[in-house]
Image (cartoon, rainbow over all chains, first blue to last red):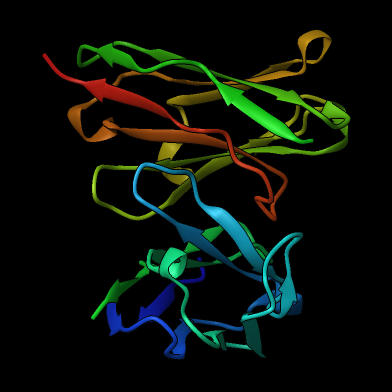
Length: 108
Length: 115
């Protein structure tokens, strides 16, 4: 099973600032099958990025993903008020599918 | 537009079973696997398994083997997840989500296990 470790656990930032979230895998993620999700309280997760760097439909370009192998990054270039939430990475290249523990992006 | 609509909240006693439904619309139901993910209160996401909505084949996470059953009814574009021998730590929101990319999610179904 691939274990995903996200850091930091919490990121305290202000609107307009840049956010950098990390996701490290215990072994190489097959074919870059790494996704990022955003989850707001009381809502289902929403797909942001798939294939490590491809934005999902309707996702604004302030969200970008990068990385390969075992190290992946989600960058939000300029935080908007609606971006404060919990972010999860997930690998879907091998079974079982696994998720990271999440990074909470909170308002400073 | 793609929509996954799940059944309502459930309260169950320990040892009982629960069956959650997920009705799909806006796409060809049998063209995509359906996955199930759960989230305990205040916790992260946990993948439970998938069902091939075309053939009915299934694959479950080892943790749930023997307790979970995923089925589907193609005539009404609905997938089901049944979890048996419920325990208090099965209290969670259960989600269905389309394909391994999990590109569309249901709204979630809260299952509370309490005596």
